[in-house]
Amino acid sequence: MLFVALISASAQLSPEITSWVLNTNSATGYGGILSNVQVVQYDATDVYISCTCIPGYSIGPWTGDPNIPSNQNFVFKITRSPQKNTGTKTVVGLGQIGVWSNGVVIFNASDGMSYNNDNTWHRNAYYFEGSSFDDCLGHPDISGCYHHHVNPKCLYNDSDKTQHSPIIGYAFDGYPVYGAYGYSNPLNASSPIKRMLSSYQLRTTMVNRDTLPNGTIVSVANEGPAVNASYPLGGFMEDYKYVAGSGDLDTNNGRFCITPEYPLGTYAYFVTIDSTYTPVYPYVLGLTYYGVVQPGNTAPGAGHNTPTDSTTVFTSVNTVEKKQINLTLEPNPVTDFAYFYIDPASDNNITGALYDMNGKALKTYTNLQPSMSYSIDFTSYPTGVYLLRLQTSNAVFSKKIIKVQQ
Image (tube, rainbow, N blue to C red; front, side, top):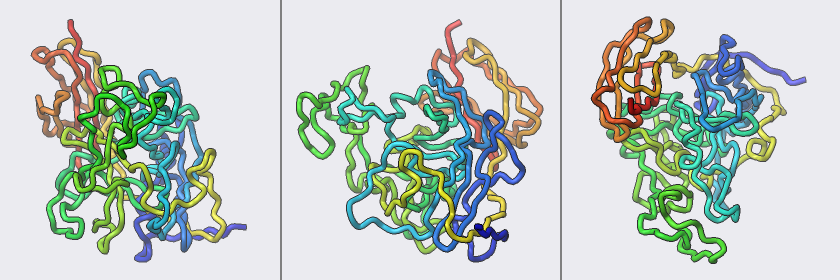
């Protein structure tokens, strides 16, 4: 029989144990399913994360996506001693490649399909599936696995440019995944905070998709579609080329650096976004993992590990868990005025702004309060898509609003 001990936090605990959003009160999310992480247990070598793949924040709807999130009953195994892979790098494949701190899984940049199904030009999920992402930038797959290919913006405050982002997950090679901001000098914790820049660049001179990023000329049968309105530049993963030194991050979309949780330094991945919070390729991990990937998490049907040694259950609450901002907004689409009501359970003193799709702030808000209704005047704005973004010190909320012709 497996012996499980219960202890609270102590000095021996490390970030791969303490960085999870624990559900300590049987809270439920989508479909009444238990949300976030249910159990964190560990031994000397590994941490086991039990989760449903349902977050604590509101998710859905998913335009054009008929799939429905369901309880995945995952138990992921994260090594406590990640090692750099000094041999052939492991390709970041389809399905789960890591787990966010709330127990939702990380997917790579691909939607799993390629042009003409010839496995040469791989479709970028953000371009081909982005319309089905909800306001938190996630959606379910055919198995009911809710996931994020890109920055999970409801999990942390991705507009906080004043401090190093928190750990928001772990890749399956055991290295942490951070939010969008880090120290400008990777080895100096006193250096200014900056948004981490990807070193993958669009191949802007490409007209015909007849060469791969490494310069290989493909056969006529394997050519992709010409760059046009139907297949814009950036629609395929091969539209990007890694250019060493052009950004802050390496080919794996990470770097070795000092972080608040690892003051002596660690390799770490970073999610990448631009100045308007739009996801930037490769979004989370690059094409390969930096470290050695353990078995048990990534193969088809994997993610249901069983500890083989005595484990300890971690019982402390993760202090980075966010209190949700809940509101009702209608009508949407809007022709003149939209109205939103902030739920009484929401946090106090909410701030934020209404942005156009160029990232320009059209209206700012301060000290919005729960149990109150507010209006947005769209009469002078052109038709198009807008973003209402609200936040407190504990939570962040984003909502797309569509202005249509009256």
